[in-house]
Image (cartoon, helix red, strand yellow):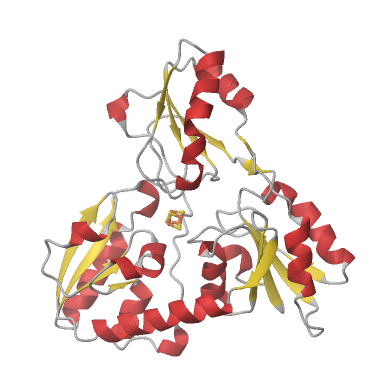
Length: 337
Ligand code: SF4
């Protein structure tokens, strides 16, 4: 497999530090890129030896989770890698560096296109921040092979971009198949759960493509089992996160009221980092996740008790049919704290 490089834009970071006269900065990487953190830190300290460079070692999964309020106001600038900004009010300036990948998109897309049958005419195209700089190349590649391509810009996302919790860019696409260009099942699964359409994943890191259907079937069976188990729950924990981009306080209050109206107990649990062992002290039968929607879906096997999305709770309470299963989203419209 070819070595994949990311463009960490050291010059852009340097210019921003100088412009802000920042003395203390913190670098924030998603889990997959943390291995590069020391190199990036060293490169910055080499060009700006008087600047204190910290690496945020806490888990970081998205732009919903910024390090601006850490280290008790000692930080002048957060440099946040590999995500695009959300409209979140921050305690200090944040520089977003998209960390574009150099991985080849041609082979995996060709592999994906060659797997499609002749009924497919129109393809919906989506990708993530790491590959979005190659969007025009992707479109040309698909059109050259006689397909028509449809893309949209969603709310809070750019054209052709999806987040793990924001699929507005594919909401209204009338297409035969959705082609997701990116690695890992995470986003492709979200696209499938959201659209229910055929989804092909073209993986630039593996240089090949795969259908997400089998993985989707497995996940949807697990969701059905969790919902079934939760139907015997008498008490619920509604989880909120204090991460600014994941905090849905009003939704948590609404869900508490809803659960109580159905005759069950509900407690609201606040957490920053959400993990299975943090739920162990609470003697509750099931949990509803108002923080990152992907925790209930992707981390399900790690939790002993059912962890539901708000829409899944509606199924448990008999307010929604299983056939109307919906993927939970967090769409941040206006700047929020
Ligand atoms: S809420 Fe979850 S899916 Fe959405 S950006 Fe944050 S980590 Fe990603």
